Length: 114
Length: 114
Image 1 (cartoon, rainbow over the protein chains, first blue to last red):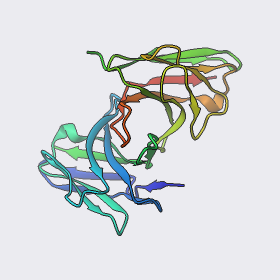
Image 2 (tube, one colour):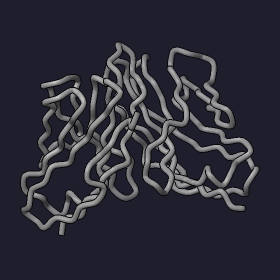
Image 3 (cartoon, helix red, strand yellow):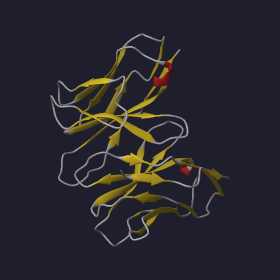
């Protein structure tokens, strides 16, 4: 079975700093997808970024980028120039190709301080 | 375009009562999902559906039933609520593709069973 582990329950940084959230996963499969979701206090789950395992290039969405290390089964999220609105729970998630079932990590609570 | 909506947003039940949570999506997605989120944990899949008239069990299906009579709606039922079912419930939907696609989430329903 696939598992996703987020080893940082909480993190806190100052506004405008860069922060990196860690995620590792375990699978014996070769074709899969990885996601980072953001859950602000409103509880809404919002997709931040997505990475296909077959792509070597790391995904980027504006201030958000990932460091995907397939051999190490690592998928970290970097937030540059952090903003107060980035304060939220962040979940790493894994999906096997064709499985359509997301497996989530436990989440990292990120606080951006003014 | 409302995306994924959930009804109700909050509910309090007594042990043994029944209720139905309604999920609706207007994106013409084939796949729909029900997750539960407990404190300190990521989302866990309860049931899912790959199309109208079909349902399948997820990771934690016991105590729940689902129905997908219309493509746009996915119902989650609790026949006899238990305190262990106190949780936040999320519905999600996605397109059908051979590769995994992004799941879009509703705002969640907070259920308390006394």
